[in-house]
Image (cartoon, rainbow, N blue to C red; front, side):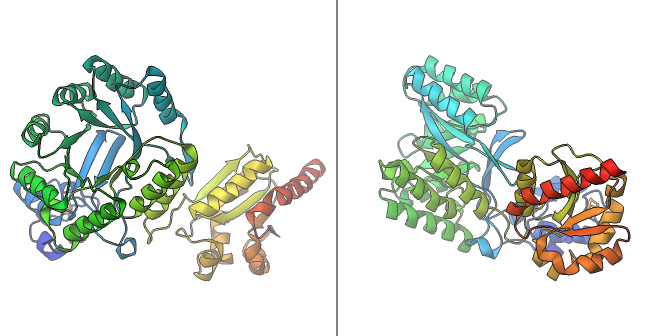
Length: 456
Ligand code: SF4
């Protein structure tokens, strides 16, 4: 059972010193109870109490971390069955495997894919983040492979598979960059769990049925292991889907400890068709994989999976936003057009993309609308004439340009007059309704401003 904010407050020193980043101990306690702050942020809590509170407020599915530093990947940590109840917390890292026994050309091809495949979308980098390294033969080849991955792909989380000797070597080569061990089964349980215990490395438990998985997890917990990942090893696709739902429901609804861990899936075990494999992976991005290993990386499928994952793992109650401010696009000067829009990330990236594509040097003003889109922000009173005028006056654009022309989104045509009253000296231009109309619009405005500059 979790603790309430009041129960947590009772365990705090109540200094109201703000060192935790919250104005009062009460505010901090409420955030800890809601899972939005770590109890360790208060430096004055007794370590025993920290442990007690951390245990009581931990998510029903443990967060297991692999990698390190800026490339730490969190698996699990989920608290709900459905995204709309709150949000899904940690997007499942996606990757493929490389076997030490593969030809050099195939190993090189796979490593190159990790370097080549990345995309930026609404300011977020999308790429494969994990690789499963299989030491199924010559130990020296496996060592060389682990070294290459660490040197050439420092951002990629590592899953080590193979003999305990190979895995042990791999762990030492990873140093502080925590890998994941694959896997302890009924056959090698003692050997692998001891290795995980000795090296303090997260471990996958692999079984052939949910009953067996539950038994393995129970034994591992009793042995003191905490950082576990589950591989249900389901025989068919339908069974895998059912198993993942059962595991998630048991963990969230029943707080069933043996299933309170992230789950790993291998979609390629259920089909030879890569397109179908990608579709299967897509299902498990939504329900309920914490880590996905594909047979290969193909741009056309991977991009779709990563975009799907990004959409599902954004917080539905928190729109993606960009910071309020002045964004110079294409090297603007004092006679370049000035365009304003809201700070909803998608709007920003679409508008910015169109301006960049137009090659017209432009000042793009981004007004904080709490992530609401243009019309919604206007309806909510966050993007009306008064608030736009206030922002334009304080943002500093008047020092950057010699003209006084401001282009507003076409959907706000109705506020033109009011805005001109609020911004004396400024001429308000009504831009296109759709961002795709910006290049032609900006070329026209830019030409007019050049004429004005010549005349000045
Ligand atoms: S740091 Fe601790 S004592 Fe200080 S306000 Fe935060 S919770 Fe209270």
